[in-house]
Image (tube, rainbow, N blue to C red; front, side, top):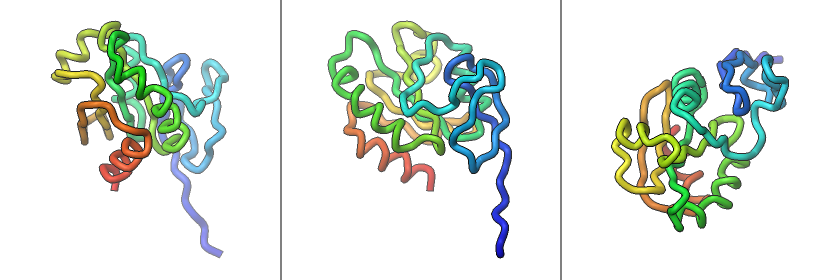
Length: 148
């Protein structure tokens, strides 16, 4: 019998934004701080730059970000599909939304020129960017291609 090694990885809680060390082979982990599920099957709505930075810099899984704005029609049209993206990619990828109106510094910092813009981060670094609305299956395919 062959044993498969499991690794402890850091996952940032979508609720309290605390970093948690969890086993990579378990999908039903809860936060050690707030006791809520670390994965919900829904995108994490980030409301400030501090929470954004925690997810990007402290998660040891890739983080997919939808930069959007409340006034953006295509952003709203894409939102239901983005929930499906989270359901398909979790727990291998953290799926988040960043409101560029609520967190304007992110637009400057990452040179976001249009919304929606999808960005994929791994190890705290940007590994891919794609401006414009996308269908859920295209987002999943694009993300998986970048992570190969």
